[in-house]
Image (tube, rainbow, N blue to C red; front, top):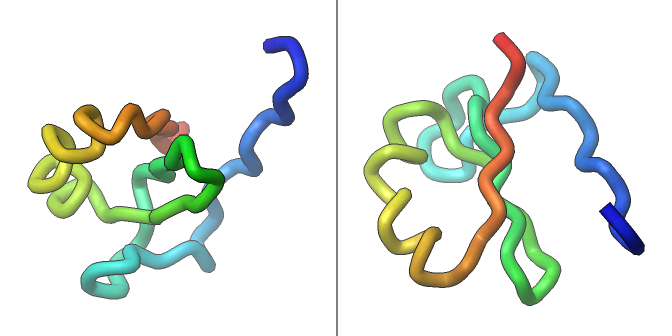
Length: 61
């Protein structure tokens, strides 16, 4: 990983940007933004996130 920093681990305080449930996935967009999703919304938006070349980081738990 040259030139990039590891993303912080998701905690219980991190909430889904769509519904407020516990975040399970961090989507880092190539433009520099990031979105947090619960498992349900991560699956629902996965195809579009892949089209946008977002990097998906799943929680450890």
